[in-house]
Image 1 (cartoon, rainbow over the protein chains, first blue to last red):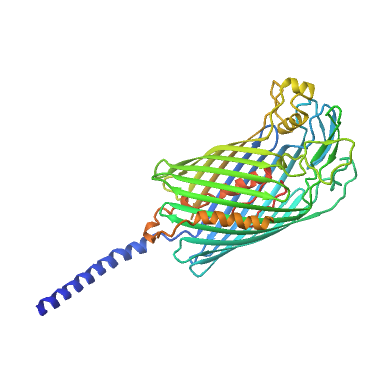
Image 2: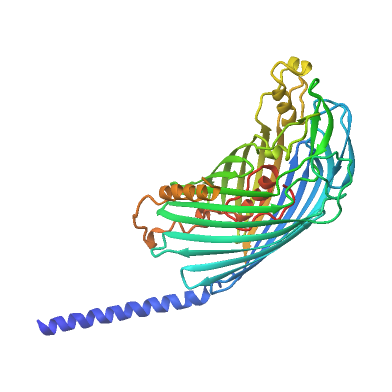
Amino acid sequence: MQLSAASTAANVRQRLGAAACLLLAGSLPAAAQAPAPPAWQLEATGLLYGEQARARVVEPMGRVTRLYANGRALSLGLAVDAVTGASPTGALPSSQVQTTTGASGRTTTTTTSSSILPTHTFEDLRTAVDLGWVEPLGTMLSVTTSAHYSREQDYASLGGGLKSSVELPGRRITLTLGGGYNRDRVFPSGGTPMGLAPDSDPRTPGDNPKEVTTGLVGLSHVVSRRWLLGVTASESREQGYLTDPYKVVSLVDPATQLPVAQVTEKRPATRTRDDVLGSSVYHLDHDILYVNYRYYWDDWGVRSHTLDLKLRHVLGVASWVQPHVRVYGQAPAWFFVYGLTHGPPLPEFASADERLGPLRTTTFGGTYGFHVPGSRGEFTLRAELLYQWLVGHPPQPDEAASGGGGGDDNLRRAIAAGDNGTDDGRHLGTRIGTLLIGYAVPF
Amino acid sequence: MTSRRRTWLAALILASIVFPGCATVHPWDRDLLAKKSMRLVPLPHELAADDHIYFSKEGSAGGMDAAGGGCGCN
């Protein structure tokens, strides 16, 4: 029995040894022939953006990343924004000639209809460059350092950020901490207006500083084989020149409710913004569902809810399609007005910028992604339609004609809500179309 | 309640929702999670474009980036 047992053990050892040799013999050539891991990554994107009867943007972006074997990565990003078109001045519609200073210098806007929002034309070219460096510290911790600079006709931004991520034991939870600092300069075309003063008043030449400090904390959690959850909270503090130098506020005659003059807008010099973002990625049998919800609030009184849903449906080994819906709603800043009453003393701050108003945005669209046969690169093509409006009911034609009926507030709100009056005199929101073409390839 | 306290309270509430259990996910169970499409941000270039669009058209900002800003569009 002992001889037999020893013989069996020796036999097993021989078979294991032979199996190991076969594995090595089979794997070594394969390893030798395996393609080297990619050392570079290229991402190129082109964005076409168009607002109905307003601004047009063409923005090519590119990013090259050098990937090192030890997990380090160095990236360089470049972007150019070419912007042309028109932007609302903030003034209420009027049949009178209104003069405002736009981003391209002094322009005169003549409004011939009391149902169309005054706009001024502008054009700008923004160039931006950023650098990023990822440094792994051990197997559980990585630190990302970034810096950026951007410049446009009347604005320059220089900033940097630091973000660190650590995987907790078990690799189910990743904790992220980050911070950033921007030192920006605002130098409006034609000088800086006084704020809540006639637009024709002398302007102050020179730069206005603006600082932005941001902190971020995030957690992501692998809930199951199919489910990844994340939560991120951030706070940013802005101080300096936060006013839009090209926006004005109409002064409305209290008797007729018609705009009779206008002053430049003025906002507080500090702003603290907070937000919490919850994210979920869930792998269904074939599809992937992405859900994001963000709650935002700041000390200007803006509160917003954003819900973002995407569903990626795999069409085959090389392509997929991803419908997208986004819904956004915000409460206005405490100093937002549609217009100010002409005569009484003006408030300390006031803005008629619709981006600080009771704004709603819906987005519908979809992305199509595909690989070209024989290539490791992936193309994405996205088309989306945005619709933006201020909360309020359009005035009925008889109300608009009489300037009353549904109330002056309704009338002003509806006037401020849109620039595309339809044939029946109603005012709708703003339609925006975007087309995004992307290509990412490792090489 | 200050805005800072509200931030942390909201983060705490969401974190308690995010971390409901302690079920184990073994390394060999991470086949789906290993896909690029299973990241919280699967298409970074789309996120960058969206951040730019919505920052310039809405009153809110924030999300996953620590630096942010860098644009005179709002």
